[in-house]
Length: 246
Image 1 (cartoon, helix red, strand yellow):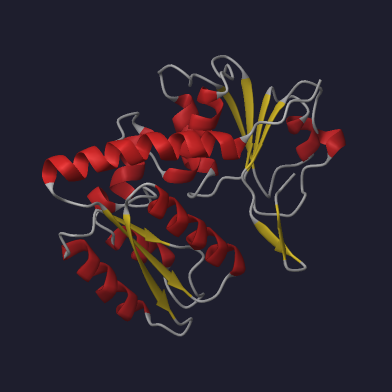
Image 2 (cartoon, one colour; image 1 turned 135 degrees about the horizontal axis):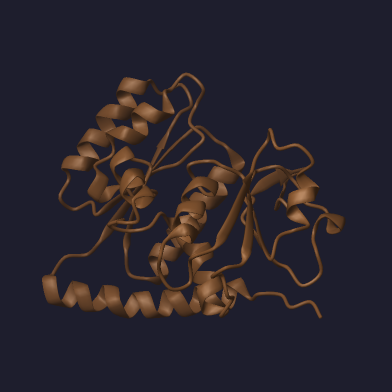
């Protein structure tokens, strides 16, 4: 029997719990956490994601600050903005929304974000700590998937988990999180990507399938075994609508 995970319900529970913690923090330290989000250009999926971040911050009493830049913004201009945000003591966290315009070196930008404010853990220091199993904190989207499975009591330990996608945004850090020697991790992992031959051969073996490749409906019904847990992280625009990878 198919069971659909109610992500909205779980998100609401997390928001309500986080709001209490944030307000306790504000009352105790007289400091309001602030998240600064930088977006360059008008990628539809990115704009949607930033809108959702703004709503989440509002629900949890976190200040939100958006920096919308034109697609012609230079790399140096973006680096200067990040430097200012790094130095701004009122800014607790920074997200540089990707993809960035093609003329900007994405890795250079991500490395410029102060590791202690690097919400997505793109900075090599944060990614390295995650790889060693010693993260200061976890990157948002993979952590959301982890929390979703944890709250649904989905057994991960020893299960064959197939991740489709190897980006630094979801696939790679997701694999590192599920490999950790801790409760709700200890998965047996396969990571697939654009060069994987016969993708369906791997997806049909999955006890848990996490789709995070960014290709609309790349995972079809006949590629999934009966009883598998499916988490669709994909966010794609097709004919003005947002669709997933499954």
